[in-house]
Image 1 (tube, rainbow, N blue to C red):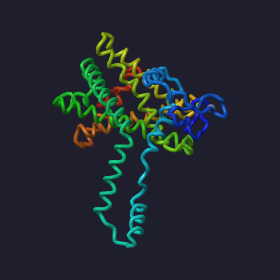
Image 2 (cartoon, helix red, strand yellow):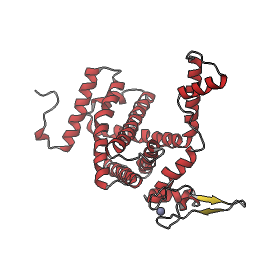
Image 3 (tube, rainbow, N blue to C red):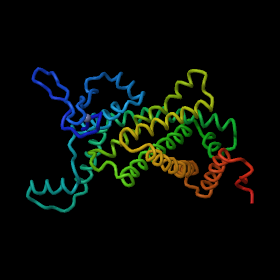
Image 4 (tube, rainbow, N blue to C red):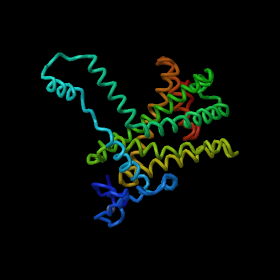
Length: 313
Ligand SMILES: [Zn+2]
């Protein structure tokens, strides 16, 4: 747990007395209350999250998450479990597959219980994002009619289209989450002292990802042009950058460089993987779609005179 003002590590956020009253702990470093959000209502916390208040993010991703996860002790590895059991029974038997499977099932069950809140937020945001991506890609396709991958996706049944966009959104989130975590830990050497570093990154991205579902309001009000959707996408990315900066305490330049690498990783992997799924593993067709996709991106970025069409010699 940390002080949400100066990020110093603390032992507890409050002291609980026998009459059910609590007293918030004061920080010895900055002399402020360590975490005032312990007493603040969830609605006000939500508003502070939208306003990108650093304390609100730190309260949720460090203190609240650690308190929640500490309720569920880790089972450890199967080897540890097996040795504990063998020494208790004073017998050393061969490796038992059904015991291993039952242990893994229990771990999976633990994971669902432990991360129930995170999973619920992720499912909710993904459900909205799938719908929004579907709407915007369909609209873009009807305007340009040049994207072969989208032509193939949009020729499928409604369920098929939904599943394709769901695969796209899940892949996008997995790449964003893992690349950001890898770069923070390996390149910026962040998180060695943070107990749940991986989940801190995931939770931060999820909370800031919420801004991506703002365009749902634009489907209700008549401002749903491609320009306004692009502006909202930029705002959502600014939210992710700001949230990562607040939580990891890195400089803006470092977070921007990290985001650039994440953007490159997403551009180079997500659409090719989606093409592979849509074409049922047909590599030549997948390569053709990917080339056309990148050509279109370059065409939007550079003047057309610098580019040849993909089939042109
Ligand atoms: Zn402090």
